[in-house]
Amino acid sequence: MKPMQYFFRRFLSDDAGNVLILTGLAVLLLVGIGGAGVDLGRQQLVRIKMQQAADAASLAGSLAPEGTDQAATALRYFNLNFPEEYLGVARPTPSISVGANVRVSASADMDTFFVRHIGTEQLTANTSSGTEGANSSSRQNYDLLLVMDMSGSMGFGDVGSGGMREVPSGLRSAVRQRGVDYCIDYYVRLFGYIDFTNYVACYSVPNTPGTPPPNFRNGAGIVGDSRMNAMRQAAYTITMQLLEDGNDDNESRVGIVTWADRIYDSVALTENATLLYDVIDRMIGVNGTNSAAGMREARRLGNQFNRDHVRAVVLLTDGKNTQAGTMRYDPSSPSYVRDEFGCLGNAMCVPTNTQSLTECSGFKNDGVLVYTIAFGREFVNGSADAATSQAFLRSCASTDEFGQPRFFLAPDSATLQAAFETILTSVKKVRIVE
Image (cartoon, rainbow, N blue to C red):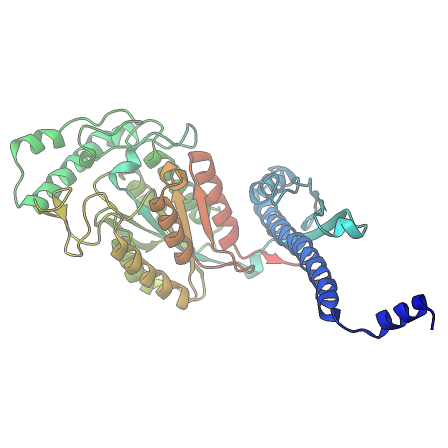
């Protein structure tokens, strides 16, 4: 046998190293499949986000007040819900048609990372949504509870300008005195008495928004561009839109709980818009943060929910929970105050998060929609407390049809007003027909 023939015969019959060759081929195949999965998964995420934006746009357009530009409203909500460069994809310009229904469709092309190596350089995500407004013969009513944080930091002026409702001039003296009374009450509960220094501090006139008042417990946020006045505007607007729609058949109701270290106002579900406006206008920033107190009171008021109504709760807070109970003077603690749960001064109070989540779960188990809003700069400063507080609010919120929490991050007044507008369109029972 010739040497060359012998060599090839041995090569073809020798199976040594076959496993290594097959493994190498399999690895290449698996890498290709994994890469394709990344691109296709990204395409699906973009499609889901775009569907959410289209749904929000069509809902908002169909609910826009008569005589307004429905297409412009729909476009604004699409842009609010589909961020620019989401997962590296440029925000598409949707096609919006307005008639008996509002229909929104959009298409986005995305560059691929892996499947481009097999000749597919782009993937396309498409979506569409259409809505039809509720008619008078099938009117839907709503029960909404607003659970509003009025802790001392709500007086800060770090949320931009515009979208503000100041305390009406005729109420300012009474509201400022309310803050003084709350301040005195805080020190009496803390020490059992109030000394002259703190008494004088309680009567100090709050500084202009943007800096803490001389004593943050004596109230802030009465005038100017403050967190409190931005929240006041948002609460006032959503109450007016639900209760004063000009329809005699409207049986919708709104209730409100204002809280800080404890409950300050509690108004049961009512159709009396004037009563609610008065409570909203008397809110003033005082003391610490205890969302569990607010949610417990909301659960009590929730016993009055009408199960024939769309039921919803909005929890708004501007920072971490700092207490779970009544603060008492404790010279052994770093901040000289401690509550019965061991929470210290301005540190994160985990027990309050836990207690609040129990109330959130109770609402959700009863079929109540829970919306949460993280308002203010504290939530976007990159701190561990910000991450923990965001996670808490996301867990508290109900999930939408895509499994996403009904949670809003609103670092400034503009995004807060937009969040409330989105909540209003969400709770409105507008049927999606596509």
